Amino acid sequence: MASEKGPSHMDATLGRRIEPWDFVESFEPRALRKETYLLYELRWTSGKIWRNANRNTTQHAEVNFIEKHISERRIRPSTNCCITWFLSWSPCWECAKVIKEFLSQHPRVTLVINAARLFYHTDPQNRQGLRDLVASGVTIKIMSMAEYRYCWEQFVNYPPGEEACCPRYTPEPMMMYALELQSTILNLPSCLKISKSHQNQLAFFNLTLQNCHYEAFYLLALGLLTAFYPTWR
Ligand SMILES: [Zn+2]
Image 1 (tube, rainbow, N blue to C red):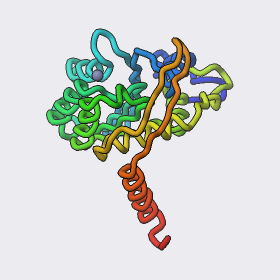
Image 2: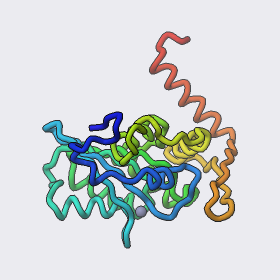
Image 3: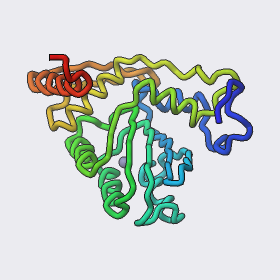
């Protein structure tokens, strides 16, 4: 449980929280770090919630998660639970295959993926992998400040009194990644260009929108307006 004095000493997740600098550097949308962090939450039907973190080793973090929980028999074919991932990079196409297989063998498991960045987002196989995950029922989103705040409170060993000191990243890269994710899911051409800067510096983002993007995003916005403001017309 979080408090104004830092995570409580009674907090069972204390030893599993990551350090603030590690979170800030790993999840910065413009930092193209090679490592992948996976912060995860399992919600059981009993109401219990487990939280933990892992990262890539010789295998990607997503595969480590799946192998660990299957080998420890935490998740069995009949298990009913909701899994939420906060990933510093979205799954690659190979992980997407493993995740898809895992979900087909565990039909009562739902998975929500919140990603800080899109992994090699112009690679056609990675783009197809994300579409396959969506087709398998996975919800994929780009992390917004709400998710960053949530991770800070639930997964970070923040210093005493700094519960509200979640890093404030520039919002533009998050929005651009979100549009690129929509383009990917809708099978439109990539609209995001990321230019790497010098080592250890943050990348630059540019959007190049074509007519198909404007049409798709217009329809998307229209759908949202219709859903949330049914009388707007
Ligand atoms: Zn992968």
